[in-house]
Length: 160
Image 1 (cartoon, helix red, strand yellow):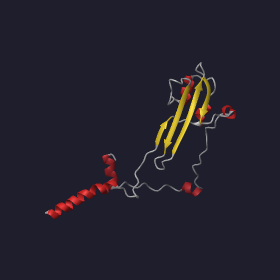
Image 2 (cartoon, one colour):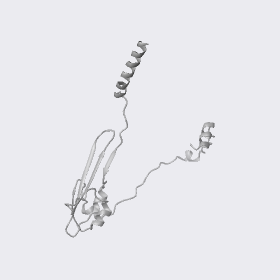
Image 3 (cartoon, one colour):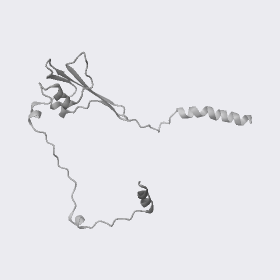
Image 4 (cartoon, rainbow, N blue to C red):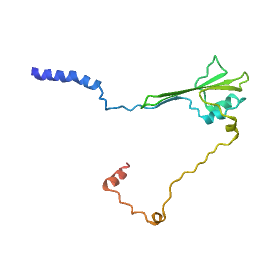
């Protein structure tokens, strides 16, 4: 009786230790974390001096930081952390307005568009090659459709 109690006590004491360590071959899933405003080059390229606050908000979205002490400045902050590698990418972009509420200048990590980019229309079409069939492969009929198995018919009947 005493022996079984000692064995039970030893097993009970080793159980928390076994759960607290993780073998090296087990990797838990970590999600990608994306926070802030996503700004693309196309969005920033549409900014022009003299635009109103509403026009800037329409192009870039609502700023992440709108400080009451610096009302002429909007800050757009972006941070991305890759879950698998842990690499962190961060960008900061600031928009400055004059006393009349018009866009005066911008600054930050995203580059401003060149004059040539503003005058030439963007190319929005592309050709995708889906491949082509040879003459004899196109003339060949498709194989007959296989009847679903009993298991597949049962799963379809259950709605899966």
